[in-house]
Image 1 (cartoon, rainbow, N blue to C red):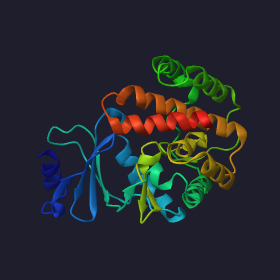
Image 2 (cartoon, rainbow, N blue to C red; image 1 turned 90 degrees about the vertical axis):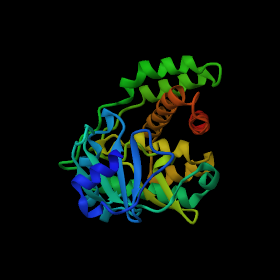
Image 3 (cartoon, rainbow, N blue to C red; image 1 turned 135 degrees about the vertical axis):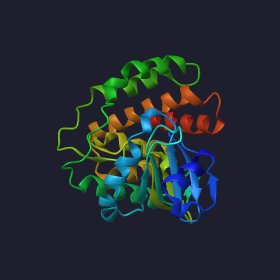
Length: 278
C-alpha cells in the first residue's frame, strides 16, 4: 500500500500504527487515519499540492488566536515511491461533519462561526499568502455556462440576477484580511451538536473575505444567516459578493458531481437554493 510505504520510508516512528482510509474523503485529498492521534492527507490533483506546506507554515501561527480548533500540522512528507507531491501528517481532530439538518436553525452555531471569521480576519496579514487569484470576475464565463446547464432545475433568471448583482457590487476597499477560502459545511466539525473545529485550509489567503460567506448558504437558514451576518458585521457589497461565491461554487460542484453523487447533489441543491433566497 502506497501510504504505508511512504510512512515507513519517511516517518518510521509511525510505521507500526494502524492505517485506515477515511470515507468519504475530500475532493482534494485522500485521507487516512494513522493510529488514534494522526491523520495523513495526500493531494488528489495538482490544485492541492501546495496545501501541506502552506498549512505547516501558517496554521501553528493562527491556532492560538482562533476560538475553534484547527488542524495541527506535524510533518510534511516529500514525493517518493512514485507519488509526485508533498503530503501532510497532522493531529487527528475528532468530530462529525456539520450538517444543515443539525445546525441550520442554530443561532449558537451561527455566532460561533462568525466569531471564528472575526478572529481570523483580525490576525495581522503581513507576510501572509496572497489570495488564489480566483476572483468572481474570473468565474463569469464558467458560471454563466453552468446557469444555462441547470436551467431546467433552477430558476436561471434568478441565478443570473444574483450573479450579476455580485459582479457589480463594489469590491473590498479596506486592507486585505485573512480568509479561509473554502468555508462550507464539509469543512466544519461538530462535537455533541456544537461547532468544534474548522479544517481544510487549502484556500487560506488574504484579500476579500466575501468568499467565506459561503458557509451562510451551505449550513444556515434565512433566520440564522441574519444572526451570522449581524455578528460578523457584513456590509451589503460583501454580502452580495458572498452570495455570488455561493452561487458560483455551488453550480460548479453541482455540474461536476451531482449526477454521480447523491450526497453532493443534495448539498449543492441546498446551497444554490439558499443563495437564491438571500
